[in-house]
Length: 403
Image (tube, helix red, strand yellow):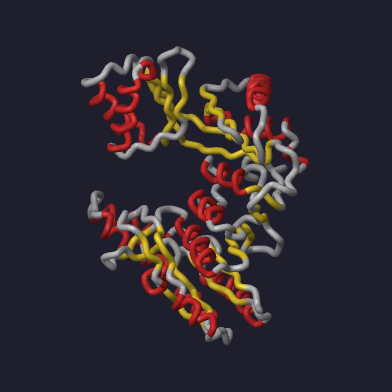
C-alpha cells in the first residue's frame, strides 16, 4: 500500500506564483511516483497581516467572528491557486476549506481549538485518486461559523489531519532546512539537527523557535504523529521530531531559543501574599496580558514578570488599578530585553548549567537580569542589544557548533 503523507507549506513556500508552481512540480512528481498526499497550505506570505490591517482601518475593535471570516480568506487564495497549478500538471486535485473537510472546532474565535477532524470525505477523495488541498489555520464551530486557530495554526491543522488519517508522516515545509541548534541569523555556525525529541522541540517552539508552532508539537506528541521539518526550497532529509529518546545522545544542551522584544515588571511585595498573587494573575489574564517568565526575585517578597513590550502599557494600567485594592509594594519596569533559553534532550543538573551560564555571560560582559529553570530548559533575560553576543558565546561554550 502506498504511503500517505500530509504536507504543510507555509506562507513563504507559497508566497508567489513562482513558488506555487515550484511546489506544484514537486507534489506532482511525488504523486506520479505513487505517493498519497494531502496538502495543507497557509496564506501567501504577508496576506494575513494585510487582512488584519484592513480590518483595523475599518474598526480596531472588530468582532472576532468577523475577523475570522475575513482573515480565513487568505488560505482560500492559496489552495485555489495550488489546485489550478496541480490540475494543469495532470494531477486530480480539489481545494477544500476547513468547513468542507469538517475540521470541527470550539467557538473561540481567533484562537479556536480543534475538537475533531472528520475523515470520510478526505478518504473518499484519496480512494478516488484525488489530492485534497486543504486550507490551514481554519475550521468550523458547532454553529457553522468559520473559526481560525491563531498564529501558526496551519501547522496544527496538518498534524490534526495526519492524526485523523493515521498518515505515515506529517511533513512541515518551510523556508529553512530543518531545526537548527539556534537561529542561523544570530549564529552562522548553527547546525541542523537530524533529529530532536518532542519534549525538546516543544520547549524550543514555546521559547521562541519559529520553525514549528508549539500547539502542533503538542498535538503530534498526543496522537503519536511522525513529524518532520523540511525545506520547500531545497532537497534534504530535514529534522525528524522523535517520540522517544531511546537513540538520542545522553542528556545535554541541544539548542538555544531566543525571544526578543520583552519587558520586565518587578513588584516588591506580591510574593508574600498568595491571595494578592492570585488576584494579580487573574487581573492580567482578564486584561488580555500574557506573561512569559514568572520568577521570585532575590528579595524574599519580590516577583518578576516578563511580557511582550507591546503589552507593557496595558500591564502597567492594570497594575495601577489593582494597586488601589492590594498592596503591590514598589512597581518598576524595564524594556529593551530579550530571553535566551538553553534546551536539553533530558534532565540536566541545572544548578551546574546555571552557574556555567552566569560565568560564560559575565566573561563577555553580559548581566543576567532574570533566571528561570525547568526540568529540561534554562532561560535568562538580558539586554536585547547583547543578544547576538550572548547566543554566540553560549553556542560555542556548549559546543553546539560541533553537533
